[in-house]
Length: 237
Ligand code: IPE
Ligand code: IPE
Ligand code: MG
Image (cartoon, rainbow, N blue to C red):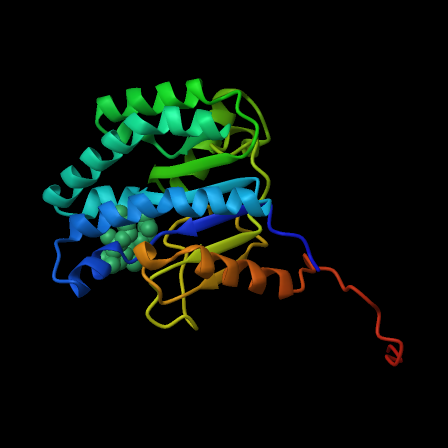
């Protein structure tokens, strides 16, 4: 049996539709979605996943969503981060953030810095939250930093510099799973990631659903551009 993915990324989509389906407000979907992160995180770590990166808010979301929804999201982030330090320290999990956090209110930035520092020595796994994040923006910022430091290796300046490459990306809330998209999620790190997509909305994506994604990953044959075994019957040119 193949091993579990070391680094899993989740594009947590479908909170709004989950709420609308239940006659609730979109922000109630975001609350349910935020609660689900804990369940999946601890389950993933127990299976052997080392890094879980969750896409919580894109730069495009910040630019294009109504103020009311953004205010709800900011309040939710602030409140969740308030509990995070104690919970993650108990589980020995470190928390990291990816993205241009300067696009977020200052009190969220401060809380994010505080939890990052307080959990930095934990070694049972990493939860990375991509917020105010855009893959193109991450690359652009890294290139700018490399240029300022006269370095010819911009990858050293990516937010996720010390993370392994993405093995598996899960996208939830995909209407038709035969056609999916990354929505600007970890464009550099996803080079050879397997992509699993499901119509299940994020708040309904439970440990069983996660197991299905892991099972599919284990079944996939990863060649990274190579040929695994030469065909003996191939006569050549
Ligand atoms: C994903 O859920 C979470 C964020 C983008 C903040 P959506 O809010 O995109 O939910 P849908 O796609 O409208 O259902
Ligand atoms: C992607 O979801 C961003 C997050 C899950 C945070 P979106 O709902 O913003 O993506 P699109 O607009 O469907 O591509
Ligand atoms: Mg969406």
